[in-house]
Image (cartoon, rainbow, N blue to C red; front, top):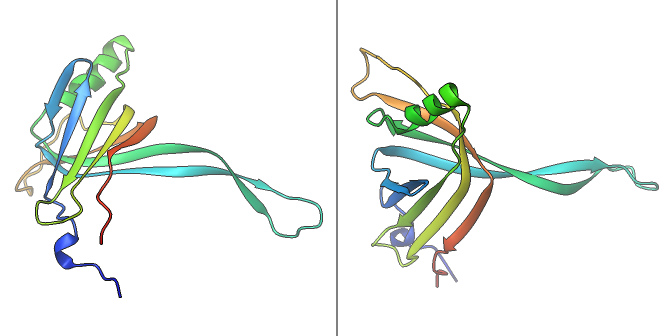
Length: 152
């Protein structure tokens, strides 16, 4: 009987993320959480002789959020560039999950065509121990550069 060993689960802290904007590559050590989701777009179709509404996949969209510690101006600068010039930034985010205690190895996922939806431009909070901000984004392509190893 197969079962998952607890040691093969992936610790959420064992990973890294990188952002590449043009020729600039930066480790995103200030990330607290990052989640990118692909959602299928489906058309509803009715056919003769069938009462049920059927569904056909017609595309997909990628979106995500990241919660970061409020310690970088990078995303505010990208938004300011758009505000001042109309020039929008599309960039890449690389996410690596690699827990050395797990036999699953490393998974590397690349998000391409990442574009910001919203950015907090200024923040104060007397109740916060550490300021954080949530950054929403979309992406236009995704690829799994390195998949996890299959579990035995």
